Length: 504
Image 1 (cartoon, rainbow, N blue to C red):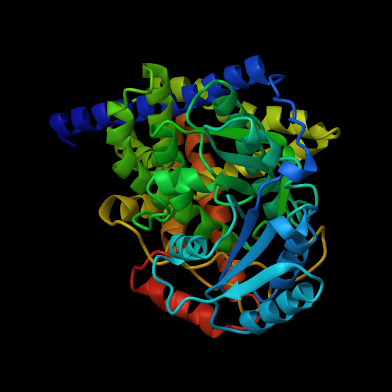
Image 2: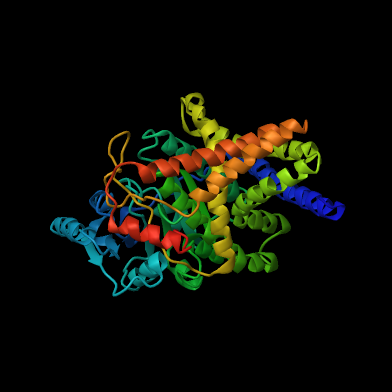
């Protein structure tokens, strides 16, 4: 290998390591901000019952026959004056979901609840389009959104709406996601721990330290005036929630995060579904970075720290393609007998930041937090193993605006109960699995080479990659090969994946 090529690879390696280290440092900063502000909870204002505003609950759904009844029943059971509550089931379905939704809505209408199933002529704009269409027919001053996998608790409105009434510049309230089926499998435990880190630590730190935060798409409340004055729901990204919340804050509106108010939800039991969900979040975040990054930099409302933290937040999913590039570069450097331990030591130290976020979140949320940390090694493997899946999604986000929405399937799983392998919604394959197999073999070969060359510091790093990609690929293949019905929806997704259309 020529000297100039080695020099380029070493420079790239150092640059990628420093970039990844910056994301690790970002986690350390959020940890410090969380610890400093963790007790700064805002008390719930008291509101006279007659001053409670009119509220519209929007339930956007698409082909959700397993959970639509649970969702509608929970929304209809919210404790709020009936004359000031409207429920919209925004149904874009093309299967049995519509009949089920109509049946449950009719049942609750007979009980005196203002609930209607609204259907558009097409799915233009996907979720953003459905929310916009519903908003045109909403009578509420405040808009509450719950996705199909959520179960709104009865106290939700009573514990969120009062904050708006004494804060006229408050645009949005986000609540903490809880988990209906965290103990269903090791995979759901991993997802629960990852989400806990985001909601218990990161969102709390951002909001209470005055940094920009974002709406997570569900289990939240919006002031209608804030939606409309900030440009409304837009579908040029596939993360319409992140997009609108940043536009609102850049326009001068404030957001509030309430970690003590829960919105219980179902976690995907399939690795393929989890990867599909992650791909959408990745693609949409990169699109929002392209769209909003320049506005963040130019904003006169933000100080330098707010701008830097916002850019790191918007670009966080770039860490996955950077991890893949780091692996790709490591093996050629090993062939050229180039040591990598110094850079790896720096990355290793700062990479403990995200791990500590997960640990502190478990400590903050659960009495038996130490037992829950048994899933932490698996979280590290899965978090690394989806890097190729998210790298592909990052590329899509860089190339295109918007995108076709392919839903994350839900199966009505609660606790350890329920099944999914024979559902027509189960996924059978994706476009990332072959790459994960190849990257696992590549990393394994690199580990062997590092051992032969005596670069022992690189061996654990490469074995982690091999195990991570191998685990994610094996779980994906198992779900595709295991017995179960192959629905038309699943086969359609498979054909789109083979044509290179990323599921989101």
